[in-house]
Length: 125
Image (cartoon, rainbow, N blue to C red; front, side):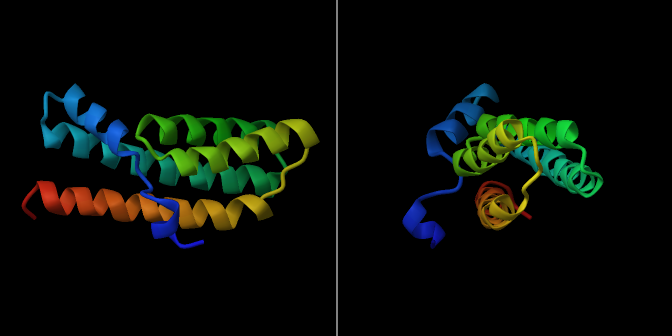
């Protein structure tokens, strides 16, 4: 499904709220978003290792962490994908990455594009 049809990857109200937390300071917002991307990249690696090792507990924990941090920055579609993977792991007691991977990749790339747009519009390069 095309991301434009699905809507923005980042919830505008969540971004506005994060901007307000920094008293309207885009530097704060961009630092937070950069930390989110760094953390998410790390968690993606951890999830791949957990899946490769068949470590269900780590897989579920990583999916939970990805869902929470994504929700906190307004990446609601991505959070939903991670929550679905977490729930699936808890309910089936298996790691099934296939339904997760394509949706995660699509939504995370959309999130990173929107973060790059915010960075480009808000701060001189």
